[in-house]
Length: 219
Image (tube, rainbow, N blue to C red; front, side, top):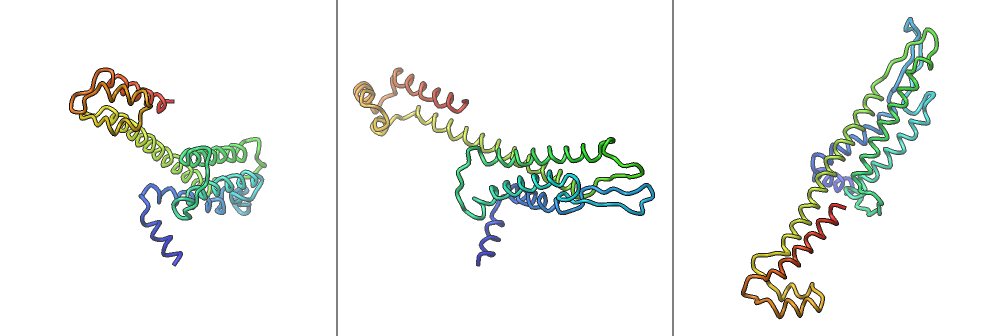
């Protein structure tokens, strides 16, 4: 029953949401895959490390924690249907998780493959896990950025559309009076004929309201 409900939730998701979830899952799994390997010059022996082992395992633990937090934030509304109060927009948090993951990938690479961090007669190579982690983090950043831009454009359109409705072609002053203070009720109720075009004073007042809304939106 529960598994069927989860399957239906996943099927109903937009394609970008599905890709985002897959990127988080693969990013977490990549930490359990080989990240780097060192062999002797003859290639007969050597050590291989995952993202959670080796000399830089602590950075791998930090990456895992960040990805788990990001994945939980991702599924809380879409699958778990739980409400969590976030101080920052969700898309911005997910984007930050991807950016931090890439940053730590670069740190691991720059330390482990630095010429001073090398033993004589030992060759080092990057394995699939590190590539996968980097790729998943880049996908998370890209999709989160696109979703954030779409959300901002949608909010701007709603605010602008509502602002435009403050200056309609046919004015219903009786409806509008409920949203005005008593002084404006008296002033506009006495000076404007419901069957006539609005006065310049009323139009200027509505325009000022629209400018205030646009100013708040830009801030």
